Image 1 (cartoon, helix red, strand yellow):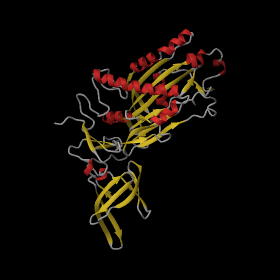
Image 2 (image 1 turned 30 degrees about the vertical axis):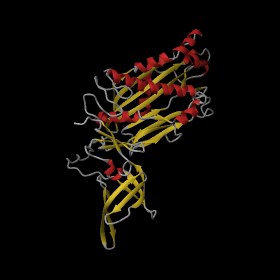
Image 3 (image 1 turned 120 degrees about the vertical axis):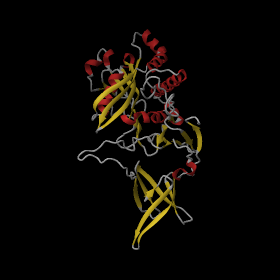
Image 4 (image 1 turned 90 degrees about the vertical axis):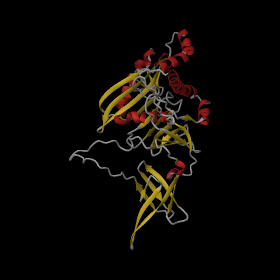
Length: 428
């Protein structure tokens, strides 16, 4: 069976009398595939479930299920050298002709929603730490989140939010350092000497990418605005700490752009975090708003604006947040929300000022004099990510470069109430 981009299908059915060719039109509506063979009055309703970006399970009314797999069109090209596999960019890494983004919920607690590209996978979500298993409450006060979106199982293109952890550093304890050694637990926190933001990101890279080789740090940014804003907001409580002769709370932020080889492919990846040093009063330090974002190096610039749009689309569920804020988790949640908000404010202020700080705030470190609007992909003085943007009543967004394309009259997009929201590229 062949499903074509123009909304038609072709199927060859074998029987005792030979092979029968069936042609017709199809439309995809959520989890239902409608197939209308030529000459028929009513379409056949088939349940469909996508197992991955290239495989869909089709269940007919007879309860028979078949798997349909994406088949790549043949291309005229030079043959692959004998005994070697030529490296190419997979479909998961190419800029799509059309990009359909659907708003989905974080699966574990419905804590937030985010725009997910069609065919991508969700990994992880919100989770709770059992204080009894961690030998204390130090990491059980607030919920944690380890949440990722990836283009395929391997994570060829991906975004991941890593959980915030509280660590114990007993430098300011007169007796604690003698009884609790690194690797042990103190009040539910792993005993670990404090790391600065650069060291913390380097440690994450080593842990999360053990197969990476030929690693190079391309650029770094201290995200000084984030650190300065958090320091300013903490000034009142730090003044109280100083009056009690206690060390103030300190912040250290950093973003790093690295490049490395993994399984024969060259990748670029952005890592960012903020380290909060609260050893003076709580004998602890923590990482906040830690992220990893990657794509193959040769298509990294293509995916930048798309990943920006996805990252900034995250919206907290107000009912979930209200419930959590009413508990003792409030301070930790406020800190995380504050850092998120600061980064968005900084992006907007830089956009208005048209600053050229040498990197793109929030997500990517970039070449000087570059700014790209994360909501449209528009690059000032350059080429936009997509020219046209459509939205529908379900809150989905469809980006495309195709002039004259109308999803209301095209195959699987039909019946979804699309309207043109804006032209990313000014009309010519």
